[in-house]
Image (cartoon, rainbow, N blue to C red; front, side, top):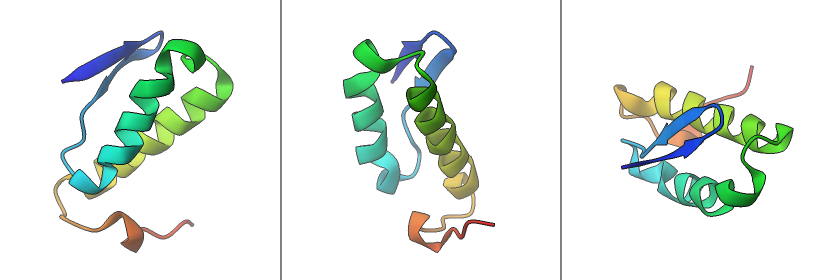
Length: 65
């Protein structure tokens, strides 16, 4: 499952800990998609999804550099 934005689709997370983040993005996409703040949050979501996809790490365990 996914939803579309002006910059492409946003896919459902494989990591269930990111589900609420995905749902918030999907909820606000109709009004905020394309805005700088939405794109920042989308990029963070996609980075977290990528970082936790195969490793099975908790989102909490990711540290900012």
